[in-house]
Amino acid sequence: MTKRDRGERGPASFQKKMREAEFYVEFDKDMLAMGKQKNKLASWLGLQLRTKFPYHIPTNEFDKQDWEKLWSDAKVQWKILDDGPKDVFIIKGKKNSTDRRSKLEKSAKAKASALNNKDFHRTGRTGYKGLKDNFDDRWQ
Image 1 (cartoon, rainbow, N blue to C red):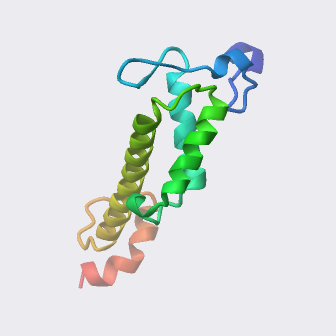
Image 2: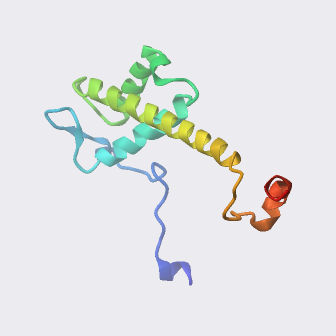
């Protein structure tokens, strides 16, 4: 299959050059983003949270100035003229950050729990080779 047969692949998010007019986001009366760019704004927010806010620190311990800086960056990047959506934007950012941290903690707990499993009813990705360490404990 050639590249021409399957079509062109689009670039990853925010690596594509966007025109100036595409960085404009509209907000409804509840100060929620709407329009064509609302998903891009949400993706941009998630990317900023992952790069600027460490996951090992609880969200409520972040400095208020960090959230203010995030809002000022969003205003500049997305051509937001007033501070009306600021509170909703910061609340969404805090929820997103908290959810991400919670998901990572649940994943770590699940991995630890899986390591304590003594009765392997399936061999897993490593096959029988991966079970050799458990043979003595399992079949005495």
